Image (tube, rainbow, N blue to C red; front, side):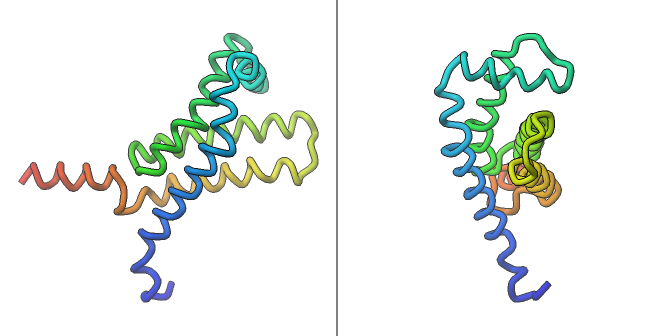
Length: 144
């Protein structure tokens, strides 16, 4: 990697966190969290692909919550790795729905790509412009 650009990697991670987070909140999450129990029940029914058939409204609410509130954690970089894990799991469920429906690959590719994105973000970490990094810094400073 070109060293002149590597010094900006934390800005790139910040841009990624904010961009992906806002897209998830407004494109994916807002409509689901405000739709209510009927949609939540349909969403939660997707868990039957994994043998989970009880309380579909609860599972659907968890999916909607994950797509609306969890990206806020992503944006500020708080509980970042658990947030990316939850979002990756949500996209694994979405991918399974498309696979079960025998949807065309063009439709399957989007949630599959998001699984890869969130796993990559999990591995990379939140970067230095995050609440997690700030809290680690404060903890180290207070220990000395």
